[in-house]
Image (tube, rainbow, N blue to C red; front, side):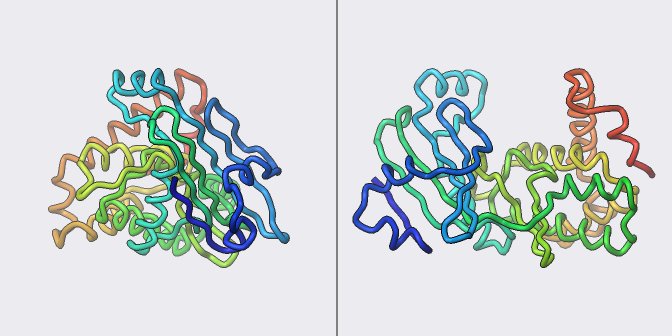
Length: 272
């Protein structure tokens, strides 16, 4: 068994059955899937999020393996990713409690508790506001630069997100930008190009509702790529990665149209 307690939990749960205390937590349930639950609760008026994982079972593990994917076995991925991003200087959540028990990977029980990032607005919500009231060019450029540098530091430091969409960036009232929802993240010595492609295409696709110009996209590529090499932008654009990002983002958009979770109007913000 592994237990890490910080903040109020270090005192509240000292010498107690931590997993029993986790089951007593009550609040607003954001997600309740088989084997996983996300809950917002408060202690002394401060907000926290609990992500609890029960064992996924061998059936789920084998299903993912057959599909060439890695099953998410518990909260360990997110706990490790939070600390890694903090080391890399990438804004993210603050983990205040973590626990894991059980040797059987199919039945392992785990949880992570993070401080709520409040009040905040996701970049997806901000994009909707921008569609109604266009931001100043300087505001848009500054935010693009911040996202690009966060993405570059993350990939350059060996982390890929696997759910890298603008809805997972939270902007607070005091202008802090944080990346959340790290439960599928992977940590490598060096991020394989296919995982960089997946992350960047997801980010590009999710930004379709934003009025991005070609210059905006070039600024993102420049600021992101500076974390990898000292090449000029002209040299960077010769990397086939960027054409693949555009193609994959477009494929995600067309798939969304077929399945009905995006609309034609979502592409209207794109311009040259």
